[in-house]
Length: 613
Image (cartoon, one colour):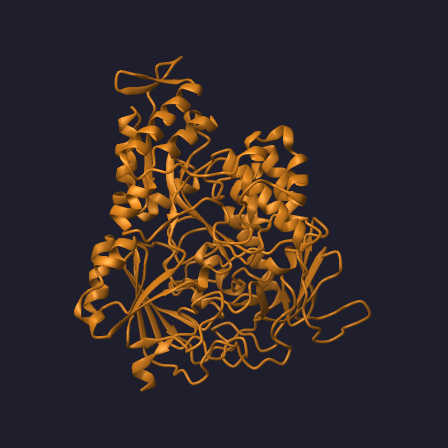
């Protein structure tokens, strides 16, 4: 749970205890809390002074120059259309704000307190009296109501994520109440604190030229918000710069102290990953998170690294509570991919061991779970409560769920590769496909097995090309097509692809977003993240088991059961991950001595070394 909306990723909360510490008692039966914890208790008391991992002596000065790949054409966060600018989340506040030192705990930001009944049927937030927009007007319940209504109306992602919000209403001068269409969904009070609050009066007003603004359309006008930064300049498609607001209303809140330290933050866009790397190497970019294991091993041998001007760190922190599924994703809406045996055959054509050796110098690990790297990942054979849950859907899942642990094929030498390709041909044959000459064709229609792999970055091509070559050996024609970021976003939103490369991030508390990933209700909803086209009654049942689990043990058992079913039905071709955040940065910027337990605090708690000196 936790939308982390500006990054388009989820940190998820589900059926675990939602506990906060009382701030004040409004009336009998009402308990105001300064935060919400989803595992155990909040770590910080109501009178906490700062987050544990920030440096209060960090200067509010200096610049941070960052890079992004692709382009952008939109500064409106409420809509799915267009490509959003990097970093735009810095200008917005949310009702609550996360601490990266806890698996998932949020503390009041725009809201000074939250209250909800035992059955979680509503959640009421009390806004801070001092909360102001950048133009000095107060943040009001009407702004919160407007924001939720427009986000649900204009964004498929928000519409799906907040589908259980039945209404939002003003219940006091500074109070706003969310009413839910379900009871005992313990995630809901938390997630409604995690969306961007938009200024109603600004969006319903006119721009500098006297033209009425339209929140349903893309815009490159510098939008206004209540957060610590403002948009200072925009070069459409190529660069955007943010400036720290001296008049930011929340700069002295304990949840914000020691953060938002750079005077300016800028993003420059590159169409080529190698050009982007060279810009970092030349010193025009300050920070880089490396996603290529081979580049990490072979390309960071230049003088600035050797003499210490550039620092390299490989950090496990962000993955301590994050499950990862990185995969090639066949679109199950396509007839050729509807048979699980076809999807399984594709996995036998991927030689991970060869990729890892030749492209990544052995720096990767094969993903074998939708919650890889966490205690939520299934392994071995189901037992105990997990087995009981699976028995409830026994007639709807493959028998192998109960008898055979999931494993990926192992390649790496010619004999194993040949055996894997033979197995792939056998699976294709079972599914009604056969080799004729050098082509894999449908035995009934003669249709060739031919599809396109859509990519959003040319840097992925070197990894996918060996897979394409392997498929060609068994008569399957796979074609790579790399498109610009705008086209990629539009095509994936409308499921206009045969296969894509995707990464799903999971937290330790999966919840409502699982329906957006794999639920039947999201399969035909443009903008959902059901990229595999899954519409499966057993999966739907298991998602509900996760969301409404009465305790943590049941939640974990239900997650493992769903993981096991998703793997057994071969919805994706699992790829790999390193399990570390590989970062490199020039010594003109720095991070606090203590990093948060579950993140790296970038860029909020980093600062300028030069300014500090």
